[in-house]
Length: 261
Ligand SMILES: Cc1cc2nc3c(=O)[nH]c(=O)nc-3n(C[C@H](O)[C@H](O)[C@H](O)COP(=O)(O)OP(=O)(O)OC[C@H]3O[C@@H](n4cnc5c(N)ncnc54)[C@H](O)[C@@H]3O)c2cc1C
Image (cartoon, rainbow, N blue to C red):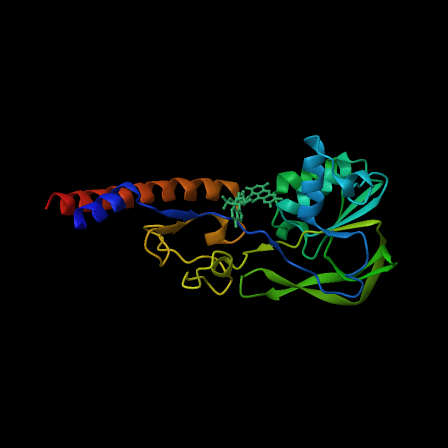
């Protein structure tokens, strides 16, 4: 009987890799956040991609998620924000402004993409942070605070602080929020409360074996690093494949030995 169980384990040797990325959009909690025509970046980008692939996309077709002819304001300075501003340009927006709370030198997105976006007519409004959204049902304007860079914070980057009486308003028919992504609650989502996560919700792994605290469960990519870059995800994927191969091979060897005994 023991031999049959071992044979079963040998054949159906389940191992898992968690590589779900990070997709929980960071929110912005300021007055007017509930007004219409304020959307998370992924809603805007997926609508545009699906339309490009020939799908029927109700919110694009009725104009809600279509930037054509609109004054578009994108909030954020990462790669996703760059995708949003350049998509809005391609959709023939009337104007595209990108609000970023630090300056150009401290922007997280690729400098080349910022340059490309500027060439395409995107107006970067450096050192600004939204203070409120103004409108009657739909957003009409964004009130922004002018910022300046203060002392470095825990991450070593200079913290943006509001300039006194530095508020001004920017016209907006469509606001796209692109403030970054956090991990979903993976232990809850996968009904595996034992899975160890960091205080940020990223999955903890043994960096050498790529294994989580649960035997046979591996993790890689953004869900381990936090929002990162494609190159790192590719590297992590390769490392995880190698480590999983090692793990499975050594399990097989041990099982064979036990089966033969
Ligand atoms: C809009 C946007 C623009 C970006 N631009 C750049 C850029 O210009 N340059 C760059 O280097 N990086 C960019 N990045 C970051 C880059 O995409 C990520 O770092 C990289 O894709 C992470 O790879 P990953 O394999 O960890 O996760 P992902 O590529 O995010 O893949 C995760 C996969 O898991 C799936 N998934 C999630 N949850 C579940 C679940 N519960 N069950 C089953 N499947 C699930 C998702 O649908 C997805 O297919 C961008 C990211 C975004 C969102």
